[in-house]
Image (cartoon, rainbow, N blue to C red; front, top):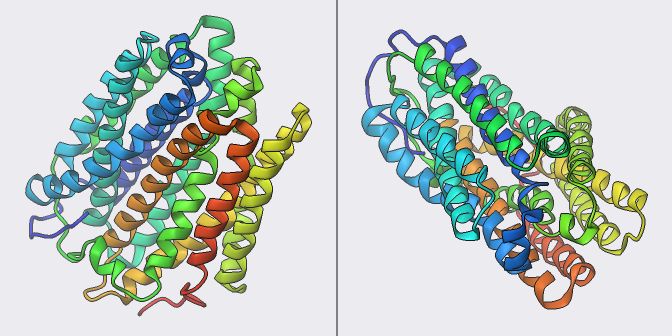
Length: 394
């Protein structure tokens, strides 16, 4: 996300920007979470096989990455309001297409539309905060907005399971359409103008050039991949109801929410290398436990470990990536969080694709062991040049 230009802030206050941005990120990840326990069990998806299911899940993040690059250009030219509205339209279309239940190609179109909407909304939301919030308060506001991502991930899967059990497979997506329309009202009513950033002109490439940033990117990608990797394959492997699957993913998200503030407090005193290294070990243990689990309670242990491992990776990485923005020249927070988004989306894309293919070739247990080894290797590489501590530029 490259942000520049000189347009005034106008009538969109920092509070309005934070409300709209938080709602946009929450809605995007709520819809993502609603799809997790439902899509792998749809007949058209089951018939397509594990590899195709992996493609379906990873296509969201792939489209998100591409849309993010174009969204930055649109924000530069027109400001954040336009991509916010594009994202709204794309998400509404995606939820309605999901409600059809198939065929597979139509669900793939819906998933791509969802990814495009996510890319537009994420860049626009963070750009809106950057354009309306003073630099000294910007990191806090972006942190609050990004915390709603976890909330959406937590609520989505169990809610989808409940809705499917009582109202059918189309109901989660019809509910998502209603939430999207409510979110749209906020975007239209609270964002009257389209302010541009005037003091945060560097993009993600400038932050990536700062020593240590690539290691942080790898940690973020692993943290995103660890949960997304099992999304397309675990529901089919378990053969459980949508409600049970939704509760399992909700359990992982709840563990992550509980662990995040704990790890966040440790970031100031403990070595980031120690925290992220522990997260890498937890990733390998979580996927191995999940792969070999033969009872539901064993799978629950694996899911809790997945949630904790994600927090151990992402909480320190979020702090470190913002610090890298202060070290870049010129200083940037927008570029930092744009780089974070791209790394997160890369993990969301790679995880499902990898497990979908490996499950189709060698089965679920072998796929989990191979994925554990691959993510542990990538996480190990991330530790080699990881910044040792944090400091905030004055």
